Amino acid sequence: MTTKETNPIERSAKTLDHALRPADWKEYVGQAGIKENLRILLTAAKGRKQQPEHVLLYGPPGLGKTTLAHLMTREIGASLRATSGPAIERVGDLASILTNLSPGDVLFIDEVHRLNRTIEEVLYPAMEAGVLDIVIGKGPSARTVQLELPAFTLIAATTRVSMLSAPLRSRFSGGTFRLTYYTEDEIRTILKRSAKILGIATDDDSIQEIAKRSRATPRTANYLLKRARDFAEVSGEPLNLKTVKKALALLEIDEIGLNQTDRDLLTVLVEKFKGGPAGLKTLAAALSEEEATLEEVHEPYLMQLGLLERTPRGRMVTEKGHQHLGFEVPQKQLLGIRSI
Figure 1 (cartoon, rainbow, N blue to C red):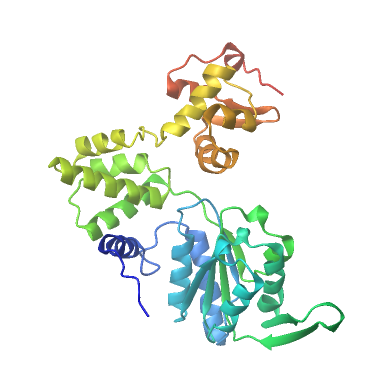
Figure 2 (cartoon, one colour):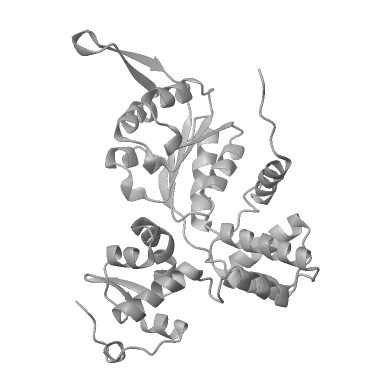
């Protein structure tokens, strides 16, 4: 039997990502309301010597859902078994995972919205009654065998909570929590901690510049910090404001965090559709992009900044969006006329 040797570069990248992950609640910046609710849930369960109830975390990617799962597991002194929706292709895959859990384990399923309905139905009795129903045989001779499962807590994470069926959502009796975007102050705190861990000597101006362009997302902030560090090392320059600006310009990240595709989306709307409205399918064809990519990756941040809006007839670039790109604002927007 042979084992695959891990590439040293891949191994160090994994170690680096793990090192940047907060190790305790005090290091986890932001999401104060969620942290307090989870603290109460876990403390109460420990006080009663019971297994914490199942929890659903949802929100845009990169906001800390996986980190919260690790912190919750550490808080109750349990082992974390992690998987993802796409990895569970058959009912047998889920059955194998559930039957191999030890008492008190935490099962973390990322991208839970990608479970198919048949697999979801196997989860219902597992979450509610702690049993696994297995069907043996087919046709009239088929019979159901019920297996007792050890007590466990399911923590599920998703970026698209609407794709979960109502029966599955209702079984997260510990609570459903929505993670929100971070403030610049919170991002600066995260960046200072990451810089310290990575051994990066930087200054407040550099941290502020990266925070401004991080799309209010910790994962993006850490990514930009690491790329700025790489640029400084390769160019032989100190990591200061000037170097950070050069690095981010090379990445095509502008002063408010828009990337090239974000700007292309707004530009196409202005130049080809006079600012809109235009339908998602039309925009996707014009940009040679997938509709889901535009809708889930690019539009949320543009809408958060007030550069883009959705109307009943399609997408429109706002007055602020025109100004950011340096285009003249259409007369209809200056007069407050909206397409209905």
